[in-house]
Image (cartoon, rainbow, N blue to C red; front, side):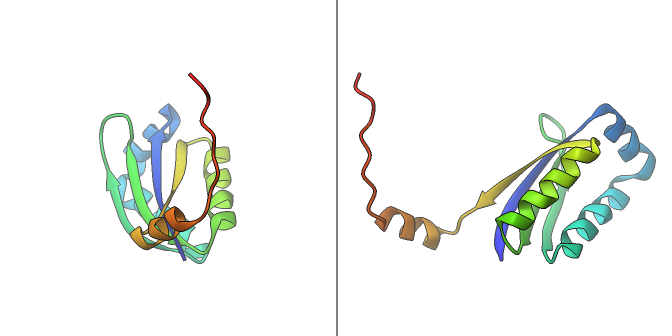
Length: 106
């Protein structure tokens, strides 16, 4: 399974729903959403500042992650972003791949 960091910022109606339902109830909704898609949640954290919610999770693949992101954003309660996370081993393999690139001339 692939690991992802989900960041979410509540809309005004979404924040009203959070205030009504509470953080634990909303975290359980997130957990159920991800688990029903074949994934698992490692951690859910609320924050204050630019981002309201951080979720560290695993889902089967990018297609599943995209489907989750589309469903959540289309519902309108939060502006969620999904960031794929790579292991150090994956980065080691990536830097060994032959890539040819010519930067723009100054």
